[in-house]
Length: 530
Image (cartoon, rainbow, N blue to C red; front, side):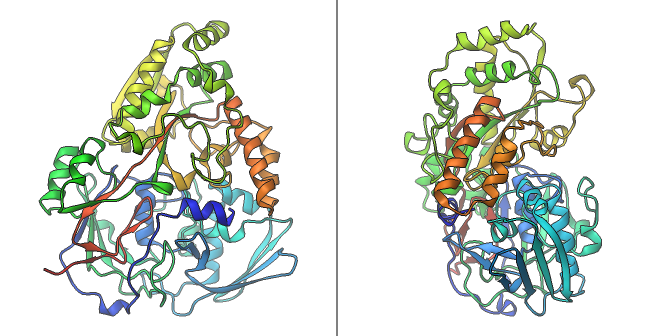
């Protein structure tokens, strides 16, 4: 990932305060957060869900991490050396690192964690394909040898976009990546005890007494991850109005995504702070289409659905002010970012419902039901889904809307079975901006032909372009390759973009040191004493 794209995608990150020793953390009332979706899966390699990433960021640490300027900084690492030809990387862990069970963090643990992540993540697969060997050179050091140029080694190991390469003990990381881990032994600033977890009620974290923050101040996702609360909680409140009332009354401290209908009233409430929700914290709505099942195994059906979507009406459904939405944004890299391009968007700018109907007639679509999995509990996904499926109905799709909660959707979308056997045709979702800002992290591009991301699209023409991008160090040539990838992705219809809009968080005004990373991180936060 280029420094410029990281800079913009992570510009909203900020760190406040210094990093005093962990032992100085003061006991306080628990810090309570309400997530946009329910936590169901604890394994950050198995699912790309943002709520799982938020959970994992509390529990596990990474080798390197981006600061507020997008520069990769050592995190669990003491440092690294790279050969003149940039084909050999030598990494050294910082001393004194321990897992939550008291055993030391070793180089073998890190190697196993990288390998497991590298089998599932798009950027990780690219790194592993370029890796000749990865071997421990001591208890706390290891060497990565490349078999070809790969320009993004640190960016891969420190990526904040899903899937994140969190470090785990080797015995856990040796679990096949298609199988969920069952033991949570962390390396991060918080401790999770599974026996205290109450699904659909609350997730409880304790300050990890074995965690040693770095000495530097918190800066973006890098620096000292100092915890000032002995306990933190993810609290389940499905109803949006109840969630807002709980925040205003001080029963919770933080809402991951402010319910869109309440943003204006929350901005007028001096008891709370609405974050900007811009830059890397903006989101893009998308329709993922199941390419393994009819009718979307036919590109004509995918293009018909693509031409059915009018983004202006979709983003209007959010109820956000005009300055918080983009009426039209057809770039896979988010509008107003370094990689934003109009390549391949001409047909979308001249779309019509008649074109969509003609494609359905041409392919012989015969009113077969289209099963759409609707996450009615998501403040972001719910409104845009209802408009998008109405637009699809208008061009002739027979929509079977299955409304349920996001946790159920997240489980069912992994099924490749026919619809009648638990499968699906369409899943609407949202991606955060820093998950899209360049090809190697963008799920709609890097997962092409990977056979791991729900939708399972594959356009062989995009494969060599991704490879060329991973090897390219020149920013201008990277942008040219990104534009070519976008053109093919629109033509193949990897996914359908529904539109870009702000998605701010909101928290109590007495919290200090909140890091707005596009997803919640609960270190560095203090509650102002009254």
